[in-house]
Image (cartoon, rainbow, N blue to C red; front, top):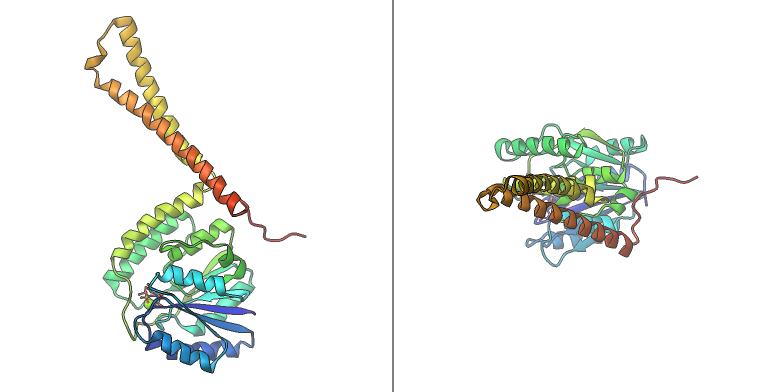
Length: 311
Ligand code: UDP
Ligand code: MG
């Protein structure tokens, strides 16, 4: 199998037949083996029936149906787990991404990249509600993760198989895949893609997602920088806090011992003790996190590295 295309579907009945036509046209012209994996994320319209009808006509199609709506990230993860192709594409089901961009992604992969991300240079969505928050989010994610691409939110991306098979997706993390892939050591690039306004159905996201993205960013930053050394993360503020607390207490003890000053009147004493406590707490938290990390890697027999090649 050469190419897999993974498509999460949530109430997109009108778009699916057209999407299939366009995908089929592009994929069959490539003269490569391919599969199209639709993941029905608990649709409540006729999406599943439409998909089943398409599958009857074409056995390049694989279908997965969730018991309920688990979200786009889960749908992508299910598709990735099923994918057998050496190169795996993800795209939306709503025709906003354009299948005719696929060959250009393949060229980039052949140049040696492991992840090629689409950049919706002329994005066709609401300016104030969608484009502006997404601009800010992209800038922020780029700054914080160090993986500077223009458009994290574009679903149309191509991956080498090893990248998706090593990704662990949780929550709504599909938007951070380039940053997570960078953690795996993937070579990443982006290309401008076509983008169309939504023809049918409705978008599943609104403004509230921007705030969730910011929370997720904290998780991703932590994973990127400290997932194998959490004590460094918690330990440094812990040490600093303990040290300041210790100095304060030392100073107060000095006053008490040599100048016989009453400490009951000194709020500074409370601060000193508090800082020592906070410091101890932080360091203990870091140690517990170290234990958890070891348990995580050892129970899954998951190495702390990934090998690109051996000769
Ligand atoms: N989607 C999904 N489950 C969800 C929400 C969305 O599978 O809970 C799918 C949806 O059917 C579409 C893709 O994810 O194929 C992107 O969703 P949408 O087009 O609503 O997002 P937007 O393009 O507006 O960011
Ligand atoms: Mg869309």
